[in-house]
Amino acid sequence: MEKAEILKRVDHTLLAQEAVWAEIREVLDDAVYYNTASACIPPSFVRRAAEHVQGKLPICTVIGFPNGYHTTAVKLYETQQALADGADEIDMVIPIGQLKDRQYQVVADEIFKVKKACSGKILKVIIETCLLTEEEKITMCKIVTNSGADYIKTSTGFSNAGAVFADVALMREHVGPQVKIKAAGGISGFEDAEEFIRLGADRLGTSRLVKLMKSGI
Picture 1 (cartoon, rainbow, N blue to C red):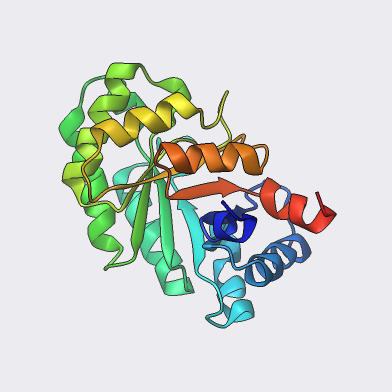
Picture 2: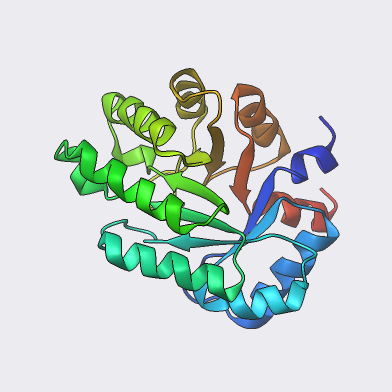
C-alpha cells in the first residue's frame, strides 16, 4: 500500500498535556499537507484549530479522556461544547469500571446518549483494550455495534499499552459490519500501519507516520 493511501486513514494526533498552540498548529498544518483523515487534538484547542484550518481538515477531539470515569452528564457537556467549537469527530472513553462491574446497560446507555449528542458527527468509542479481558473486549464489540457509534477504538495511548494486532483482528470478528475500527497507540511505522489495515482497521491514531514522512524515512 502506498504511504499516501495509509496517511488518508490517519488521525494525526497530539494529545500531550503540555502541548502548546504552536505545536498544535504544526500538527494541523502537517495534517492538511499530508492529507490525513483528521487531526486529533485536545478539546481546549478545538475552536482555534477549526478557525485555523477553515474547513480544510476534519477536527477530532477527545471526551472523557483519558480515564473514562467522568459522569455521563460531563461527557455530554464536553461533546456539545466540542461540537459548538467546531469539532467534526468525537473520540470518547467508556466507563471502564462499570464495564468490569458488568453494568453493561450503563455503558451502552452512555454511548447511545453521546452518539445522539453528536448530531450526525462521527463518534469513536475508546475501550482501552489493554485493561480488558478477551470476554470484555467481545462484550464491548457487541455494545458498540448496538449503540449506533461509528467506530470502536483500541486505546487512548495513555494507559499501559496501545494497539496490538490481535485486538484489531478480534474486533473485526465481533463488531457489526457497519462499525469501523480505529487502532491507536504504539503504531511505530508504515509496516505496522499496513498490517493494522490488513487486519481490519479503517483509522489509525498516531503522530509517528507524519513525523517519518517529514524526516524522509
